[in-house]
Image 1 (cartoon, helix red, strand yellow):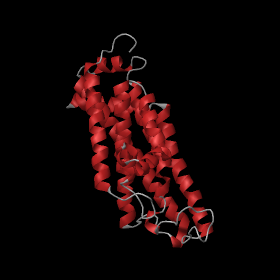
Image 2: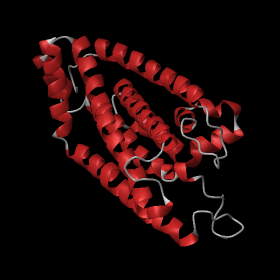
Image 3: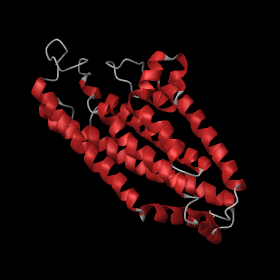
Image 4: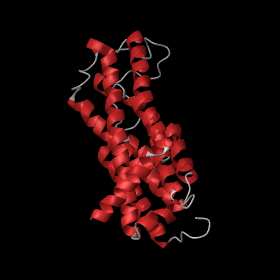
Length: 262
């Protein structure tokens, strides 16, 4: 157990020493709440009860107050997916894996330590970033918004859904990157889905809702969204994707030779 905890600590230290980790933290924890502040000011300018009939620039009516701020979720999700893919793909670059195995010879422990480390990092960023985003939104709305600290039961429920979505997609990206030994494949697969392609396929193709990002959208769909709010289905589909990615990456990790260019 001590050797496993030491491996987890080493993986966390390795991640925290990367410049990319701090860039992801700044984007998710600083820039996304800042974007929430700007967006909330825009809402105040047009009125929280604005509709396409009263504001020509609106495509849809604004959601109920409990759901304000959640439309910014894709902004922070993108760096999380990039983070997971790069961490997974980098394991086979620059002899990193060989060096790791010199410190801990058990590949099973190393693999579990890597998954636990990426899980801890994803939980840390997602909870802080999502809460700050929603809190800043309602703080900016002032008396028209919810209490910026306590929010509402609906808002807290949706914060939990978004955090779960970010965590699962980050681990999925990590697993795919580990399978293909590079970050290009998970990013090429997931990033286009985050920005409209996933939603488009879900609307045009029956099986499109089973793509990972589209399934994640089911967790926090608001009443004004064009797709239904079905968190049970979303979690089930996302969990299947994550399990398949981790099982495949585990097999690849255990069987891969770290000699040669790796």
